[in-house]
Structure formats: structure tokens, C-alpha cells
Amino acid sequence: MDLFIKICGISTFSDAAEVAAMKPDALGFVLWPGSPRAVAPEELIRWLPRVRSPAIKVGVFVQPKPEEAVRIARLAGLDVIQVHGEVDVSAYDRAGVRVWRAVHADRLSPLEFNGPRVDAWVADTYSKELPGGTGRVGNWEAVRALIQATAIPVLLAGGLHPGNVREAVRAVHPWGVDVSSGVEKGPGRKDMNKVREFIQQCRTL
View 1: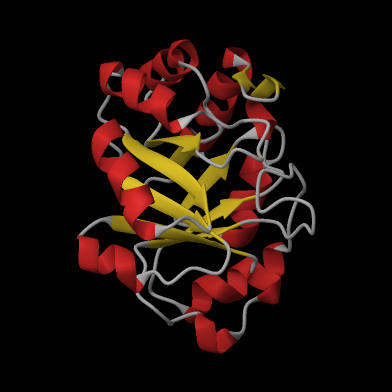
View 2: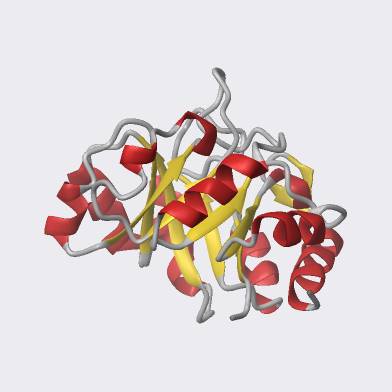
């Protein structure tokens, strides 16, 4: 099966359009104001519908109120709500939207691997300061254990970049990969050469 590729932390229309033209499987937009890659909901609602792409559009939220996240998703045309933090995902199931949950695999109890239904896990690197987007490589062994313990698709995130993504995929065998800071020229601004190289590395495994 082909590796699923998500390019996250896109914060402008121009970057979204350029990245979309490179045909990743998903585009990610951070809707948490504490992130240097944040995009304001009203801005995303204004320009995301103009991004013509079959890529899955993912909104990244940190402990949101479900009704607010669902409202933004519907107005902006998001396909998936990705949640970080302590979240009751059943609220999204009732609303009929797809939900991905970010987890720190090395801090996740095996009993949680098959807990409340989500559509995918995003295995990111733990940080006391940030819920995600740290740019630091995580515990690949713990992510492998998560993959082996669950039938739910797992995206590997945390510290990926064009120079290490092939090694990471060969070591972990995830369903997909999720990159943000590893393809940037500055917080929230994508380096299109790095994006292109990252996608090429993934597509030629």
C-alpha cells in the first residue's frame, strides 16, 4: 500500500495552493492560537474553499469544544478534525465527522490502543511546552508497538524531514507520515523545495 503523506502547518493560501499542486494525500492547518504555525479560523474559512485539490483537509485543534471544531470544519470544508490533548472523541462520532487523535506512543497505555474509536492515530513527540509541532524525533519503538497493537491507521510524526523520512518509514512501517517544521523555511512558511523532496522520498520508497 502506498504511504499516506500529510503536509501540516500550512498557514497561508499561497502555500496551500503550492503544496496542493505537489499532490500530497493531506493538507494540515493548525487552529490552535498558541502555535507559531496557527491560522485564524475566520481566515481559513475565507480561503481554504479556494484550494482546489483532492487532498484531505485536516484541521488541527488542541482540546477544542467539539461543537466549535465541527462548526469550523463545516464552514472551511475540512474533511478531518485532528485533536490533541484530553478529548472525548465520542462527541465527534455523534456529529458524523472523521477524527484523528494525536498521541504520544511512549506515554500511551496499551489499554488505550483500542479505546474510543478514532479514524487514525497521529503518533507525535511528547513535549511539556507544546502539544505538537516540536520538530523533535520521537520514540520509534513505541510507535511500532502502537502499530502492532491496533488495527487503526497510524501516522508517524515528530522530527521528520527529507533526510530521515526513508529511515523512519523502514524502521516503523506506519500507514502514513506527517511533517510540519521539517519542510519549513520559517515557522508557518513552507520551503517548497523541501516539500517536494520530502514527497519524492516518500513516493520512491
